[in-house]
Length: 178
Image 1: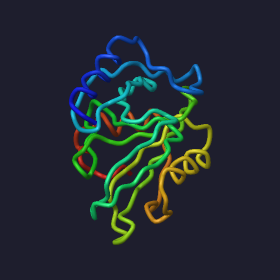
Image 2 (image 1 turned 30 degrees about the vertical axis):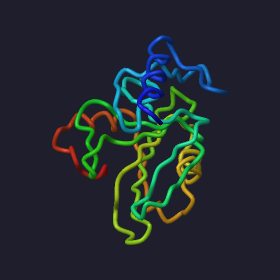
Image 3 (image 1 turned 60 degrees about the vertical axis):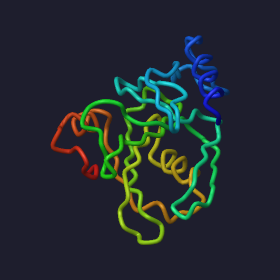
């Protein structure tokens, strides 16, 4: 995407109060982005039960990238995907914690997927999955986002309150969620 195209896109986003999301339920509202970055620009913002999430890909979009070998990949997004903005939210990879957001804004369920490197089977990073009615639904969404089951290592469940406590504890910054 060229520099002028990105500027036009950001300008269009700033002129809107919220972004139209196809088939988006009323419970989850995607607002215009509140932060900007050049690489992988944010496409929106969601406040999920008090958690500020900068959205990289809205549900129904296509996420694209290159793997470590330079091979291009893409995946259709079955849920909103972004990162937690505040608190001790750096994951083991030192990036913000990644979050998939389902349709149920009121769900207290949080599923933390411990993702692994598919080749070495070593723990890679955590993926937080919120907004789903059951553990099975959350795991089904996670697995639908990858072309191989080898990224999944294991998972834990917790409540939103437990996740909030973990996030607010600065001692957890950079650690695996357990």
